[in-house]
Each structure stands twice: as C-alpha cells, then as structure tokens.
Image (cartoon, rainbow, N blue to C red; front, side, top):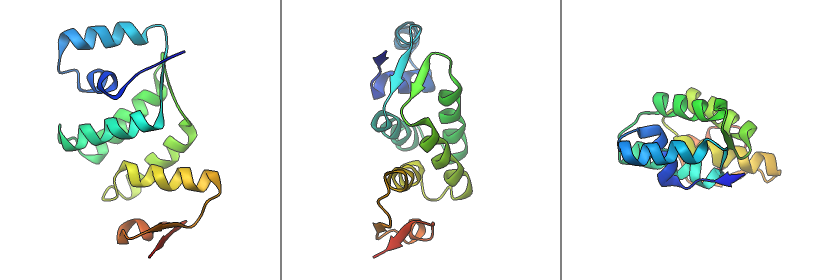
Length: 126
C-alpha cells in the first residue's frame, strides 16, 4: 500500500484546491496509508492554519478512520485519542495521541509540564 504525505491529506480534508484535490483523490483510490506523524501534522495544520476547532477536527479524523481507501496507522490508538480529545478539547489531539502511544508502549507515566495533560490518567506533572 502506498503512503501519503501531510500536504495530500490536508488537501483531502480541506478541499481548498480543486486541482490538488483531484490528484489526491486519484492517488488514494488504490488505497493509501497514513502514519501517525502525518496525521498529527495534518491536525496541527488544520488547527493552526485553517482554524478548525477540536470538534470538527475529531470528526475529520473519524472520517479517515472509516474511509474505505485510507488506512491509518494504529487506528485503535487514534480512536482512544479522539475519545480523550472529545472529553478534553483544551488538550489538543497531539497531546491525547502522545499519551495513548506511551500507554500502548507500556511507558508510563508520561512526564509533562502541561497542567491540563497531567490531569489525565497515565500522565504525571513534573
């Protein structure tokens, strides 16, 4: 399966450049894989550049998880991160995903200076 880069995934979600959108859609028709790094970077771009808020961001990521041609790396971890994001939208998707990845790898507690993140099970404020 082929992989896609952040800029391709942003085009698929933002749908703001018709020519690039058509190319991106054609590329993923045969199936495409999205790494956690690309997913995190895409969410960051949608938040910081496009101003997309946590609710719609979570909905967009869920659409990717349900997409027939797109496979997201460690989809179960992404789902858990989305659950935490919905409960704690002030954290951001990347914080939630970082905690879920650390938990799945068995490397807890996750040390953090972030007061909000430290309130979640598995995180420890330093």
